[in-house]
Length: 91
Image (cartoon, helix red, strand yellow):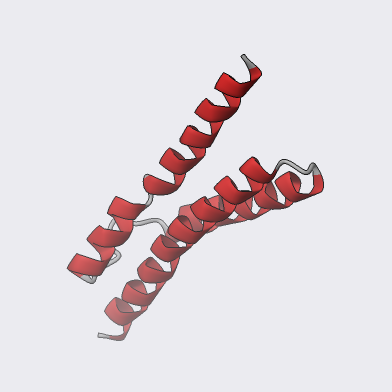
């Protein structure tokens, strides 16, 4: 049972990271951050960084790697939104 829960947890971590990819693709294609809350995504990034640190200190490397993957994909959304938002203000 423990292995099944660990497998489902790992799958959930992959899914969590993958959920940010469509938003990043949309930002890249449209080149606009309209409708994206940079503050919310920055908050998600902070929580994922804390989750990764927690995983590290608890020696829960599945959690750490999953949170780092989510931080990478969510961070991409945050950076793209900030970049295209800044371009909109400058224009």
